[in-house]
Length: 406
Image (cartoon, rainbow, N blue to C red; front, side, top):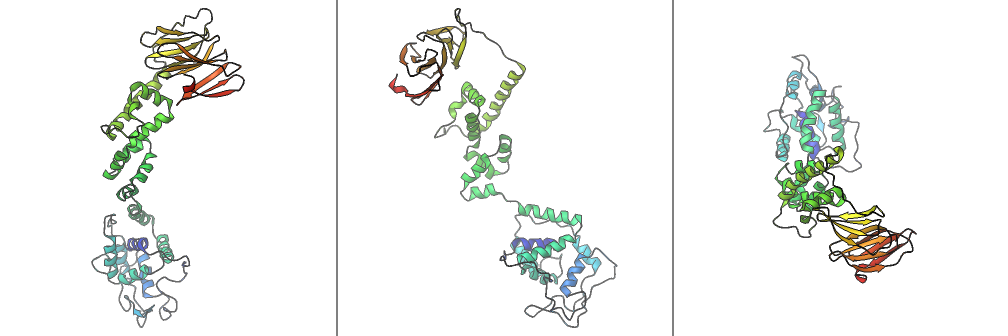
């Protein structure tokens, strides 16, 4: 149909300068060129009017009533001058031909030139070549105004057909384009913003999208991001052991994207089971008797898969075996309650209400050093990468290097 061709040429027309605007005159000629014509306008205007009619008597025809062909612009003769135009009934039937819009793979440039030449397309008479050529030479703003006038005269069904034609033309596979241009890093950053369900759908769109997800190891990055921001993910990763395959500067070559894509639903099942057990109270309770008869109370603890280390009110630090929940070590030396502690594979650092910070050998259970830097109870202690930070009840904080005190 004609309006499909008009949209086609509008989409590929050159962009005009900002000075272009919509004229109120007809885009197919000025009033001076049409002074010798009847009140119905130029033959081109009659053609447009005829195309917009919604049907009429079967014998009604639109004829050119001018005495001589109208002159357009540079003096070329009109393609419809002194010719009998198709009847209204025939034109309405042509406008309602149901032909599918061209896909993105169609050679639109070849279709454009063929329609302008008026050959190779039986849907339009040769007289339409002049209409297409004049529309193609209009400025972009005038083209838009011309199409808007057409749209205002169309019914709802025709608007739906126009919408169906435009949808595939407006779609752009930017991920594949970026990947094929060597800008796969940008494509990876775009897809990395997706959640797990959307990422799984994205890698199934086409081969290029799946390649971007696989080569960028986006499943591994998604898991790492969750472990970095969620303590539950970090705890499950440590317990299950898969966390050792994350946060590597050089990913293991034997572990590809398939491993992480299959790991993700396993992690989600563990998380759902853990949260469900907490909500419904589905757990097994084990109690440990701290054997602190004189001064009962546990102020702090830290644990792993092998042991539990607790700081007690009776001034001691006790180490418990996770397998049988029996006490394996008792560290004594503080003269006040043990309020805070932290350990790694070598040492235990503890803070007490006796205002001291003590460092212990975790294997032998011996006290290595005593730090006296506070005048009140030490409430918190943390160490990492050779640096230790402590704070006390009187709003005082100390920063120490562990290698100087061990």
